[in-house]
Amino acid sequence: MKKQLIALALIASTPWSAAAVAASPASPTTPAATTTHAAPTAKPVPRRRAAGISGSARQYYAMTWGVDQLSVKLAESGQLVRFNYRVIDATKAGPLNEKASKAMPPEDGKTYWMVFSNKGKHVKAGDRVSVAIGQVRIDGLIVQN
Image (cartoon, rainbow, N blue to C red; front, side, top):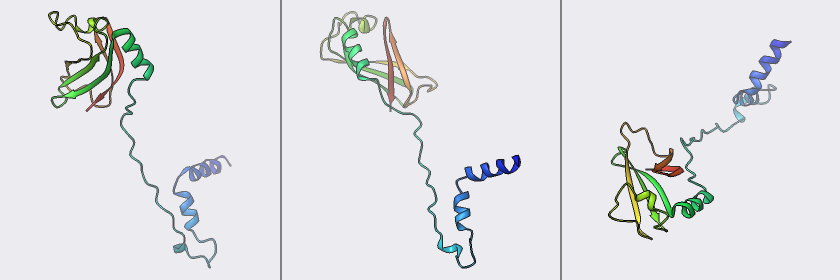
């Protein structure tokens, strides 16, 4: 009895079993050729889901660090990762620029960028990354191609 239940469970769980049962003639008067079934089509599964950072996170970075329009992109055939941001409050965005260039303070409304090495191409398009510069940490950025 237990072997029959296992066999029935296996037959019922296979996707082709319903088509095979429907195609088998129930009586000699029903031809098997009249039953047609569409073959199931496989849908491509995306490798990664690029949703980006949430609106509340963007608002937090704007209020805390004075930056918006945050993005991370691959550059130079994936050998470099480029981090872009626009300064909306130069005073708050100061920590992002303190190690890069002390001679030129950030200005409101300007877009800035930094490049990080990606030797070995460990970071790929669609990956979720965090950018840490000094005391500034920006989490959940999706790498674009």
